[in-house]
Length: 253
Ligand code: PTJ
Image (cartoon, rainbow, N blue to C red; front, side, top):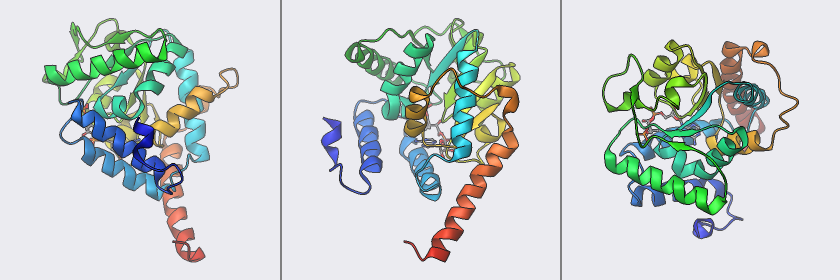
């Protein structure tokens, strides 16, 4: 079992567990070659955020959940890293929202698509939940994007009005926004193009954010109108800067 990969009492248990999940996914051929580099960049930002969900990220998560709950056609988009790290949580969220989950990857190959779709179907059976998994039969393209990464399903990403795209690449994020969709980004880097271009950005670690989302009270969610995008990104930068300053002034390690 993956949970045996490290001792739970180890101070870096969660980080080790996430790395182990990626190692397993890499062995199964699910990941892009650059997946571990992307993860390392995320880890560096998470370290600076003290590996905690900030109050601003918590509010952004609530706003995002509200947008998904109130959407006509919500869709959850997943790539290799997302399935590896949080395949179960994404499926549970899709079941809870009664919306499809679509595999949509940047470095698209038939082998990777197959590996990701089979992994998700295995997870779905194990969890015993009802969630529609799309991506196997792309019949549409995202306008403005070239190459295989533009492929999507008309009943999924193409028709979505609100779309959750964790760890999204900047081009695709911009293309989805240009289609008029409400694009929810989860990204630990508040300066990334996706974080800046998304409609709602949650600067938090993917698995922490999804655990929060899954446990939130859906009747008490703030409205999209109350969300201030630039302030949310600024809050994340302030959290990083203040955290570093306090660490030095407290003499903490
Ligand atoms: O599976 P594919 O082919 O779609 O490829 C997926 C990756 C992630 C490899 C691809 O989209 C990529 O290269 O992404 P980038 O451009 O490196 O961006 C990844 C972003 O996600 C960076 O800004 C990281 O800081 C952030 N990130 C990495 N891990 C996490 C994260 N954000 C939240 N939670 C994480 N666990």
